[in-house]
Amino acid sequence: MFSTELDAATIGQHTAFDASKSTTFKATAGAQWKISYGDGSGAAGIVGTDTVTIGGVKVEGQTVELANKVSQSFVQDTNTDGLVGLAFSSLNTGEIPKHARHADLY
Image (cartoon, rainbow, N blue to C red; front, side, top):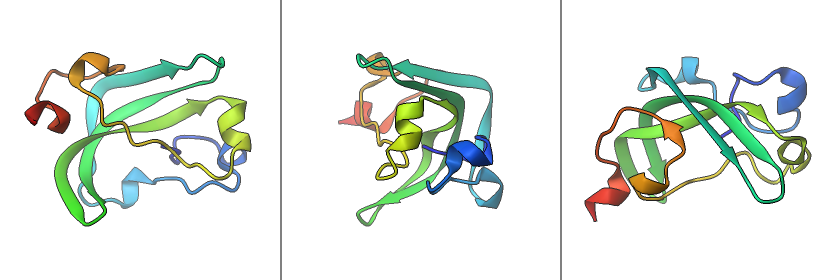
């Protein structure tokens, strides 16, 4: 997701997550992620955990990835501020410690 780890010009009209304003965010020391897509776009950043609520479902300790680099195509797409990845561990691109991800529990 767009985060305040990005410079203000890159954030532009996007909503950016500010981890310092979350009382439940915890950075995962040394953990990073990077992804590239078939169209040549990509993003990279840091990893942490936080309490996430989507559609009324609350998950504590959910791994989140905060972008500190994004392709220009993401900057230009002001309709999107990030992605929700619900993949299994084998598809994860983050370099994070091995632990059960919520998708693996089902």
